[in-house]
Figure 1 (cartoon, rainbow, N blue to C red):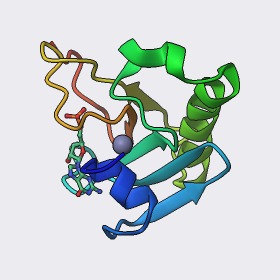
Figure 2 (tube, protein in one colour):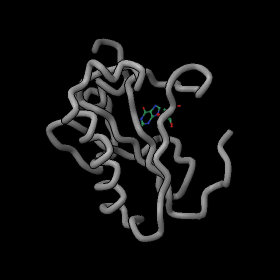
Figure 3 (cartoon, rainbow, N blue to C red):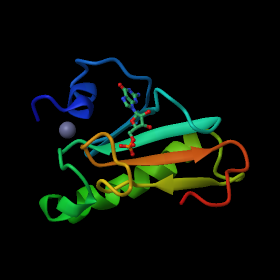
Figure 4 (cartoon, rainbow, N blue to C red):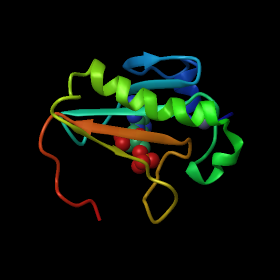
Length: 114
Ligand code: 5GP
Ligand code: ZN
């Protein structure tokens, strides 16, 4: 989608620190990490948030979660644990309107997020 930051990252028009990529997903390091490990997992098909889930196939939706787990493995935090976060819409303070999952770990995270 034109003028979407994460679509431009997928297209390589904006640089990113890639962790993993497959047919349906792309994973890269967050530019402003909120934990020692902070990755972002995005669907290659643009949807603005989980609220538009109908526009993705079941395979695409499932791939996002599998990539989160894959990224955790690649970054060595499977055993220590990690948090997967998806912000959807204004009250969740979503800032980039291309659906994405945060994968965070590498230290004990704060107990609550709200
Ligand atoms: P949201 O607040 O929408 O859930 O998360 C957006 C995330 O994207 C934030 O954690 C922010 O640091 C990250 N982000 C914003 N712009 C860029 C960028 O240009 N490159 C990378 N790697 N991450 C970005
Ligand atoms: Zn996009």
